[in-house]
Length: 328
Image (cartoon, rainbow, N blue to C red; front, top):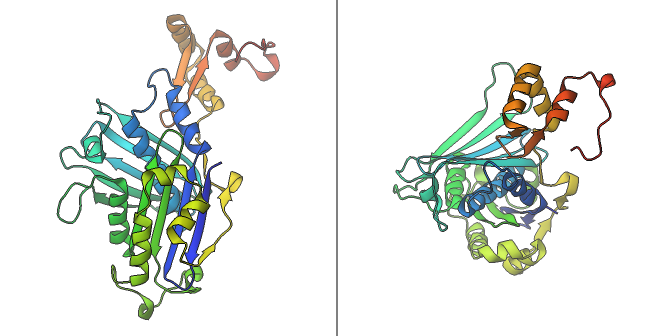
């Protein structure tokens, strides 16, 4: 079960979160793999998407934004666009557009920043927009302060957080075909219980990179390996890293309250789209192909419609003939 854990370091200006996406992540990959036209993502792309999904959950939980947080990576490589979207209820989905061949060991620059044109964008799209209100978007290049190409998504996002929020942040991200996970450690402006209130006074602010408590904890967090993050449970991770620290832990978010996969596509929506084409056009496609296969451009889920399904689309509900149990 996918889960999100939040915690504070008692008496210190530091907070943290750990996310583990399991069923949410495998459902996302299964939909794409089941698409007969696209097939599964190449391994480097799926790992990038998994890291993006984990990071987007952490960032959405961090800001408690009522709307969608959309994390995008795009540029001038074989992966034209990769997107992870997380709603305020932690429902998530992700997708990528791949147009070229990728080596099995491809890293971030090989996928989206071959010529230096790669960008990372984070968009906050309010759920209830006011008239004329536009989503907020921040964009950063996929290189560091000295124009060096960044090879890890975590480095890109740490740079973004430092630029946008002026807060030191440490991220550890990893993904395979079963788990997508992330650890976030962030310096807070206040010590102690002030963290919970989210209030900050100018006199209490620490200079970027100068807080010894944060620097010590960040060093511990950065020692977490990819294999440890993917294979160990959250309790074990926190104990191994911070056994000398006093943690104040919140109730984990899991199940209906935790991260979970959700896409807005459905068979009913695809059926409505086909009805809008008209019965003649739908019959023409069936005559040519035998079946109609429509794939969701976002998650990859395919919906199949045969001649019997087409008849039902254009028949009033009360007049539909009984359907054999063998027909899906």
